Length: 286
Image (cartoon, rainbow, N blue to C red; front, side, top):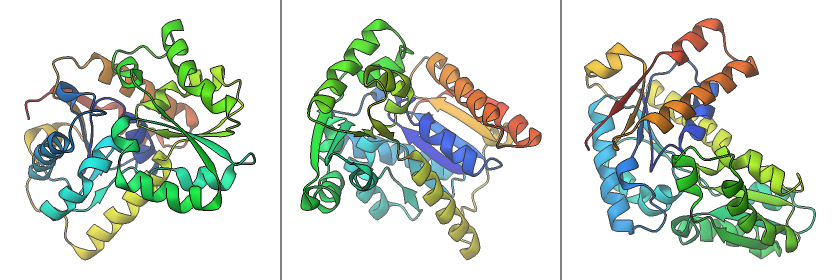
């Protein structure tokens, strides 16, 4: 089983790419909605939450864990790798492809406060952009996670808030925008609208899914997957989507939308689509 977690529902944008890459795998996705958003929380608190969720997923048979959250990756992934003997895949800041694609020499990065303060983002930005004299326009997307968590991805209010962050990038000459939070792909239609399609939108999730497949293959070749029995939830359904909050409505809505999009792309067989549609939605206390 592949374990996946995020501060909320945004990681479903990563789960979408995982499913497209590995449609027949078992998944256990956890939205830590009780503590969402992570953006301005302390590193200590985020590591504590990430560790508790990781223990839960390992106990249920996870072979690898995808940290489908840029903020949690920045704050906790090194601590997780030191504490747990299981492969982790995190969210890599997609500055490198943006720096390679830009024609104007200016790129935008839309991310949370925690991600922009992370050492991985700073190192990647310095190596692939600033050393090559590519200018980065950073915007902290305060309020955007809450929009997605509330299911508000199309309203005039949502459009106005996205525009507030995108306009400075365009005014500075950016021609690419890096989505530095897994919630933000759900706002991509608005980003394209307010930018009049002037920005190349870069979502790192496909690359993360590719890396996850490589690691899972390695785990299985080496025979180091979890030997723990799956609990009754994962035996009843191969896909479990859970929240630590009390409301599964947003998760259900976004997951349904994602599965419909995947089906419409025509990449999966009928049996794979049927497997994808058998999802259990639950609330957890972790």
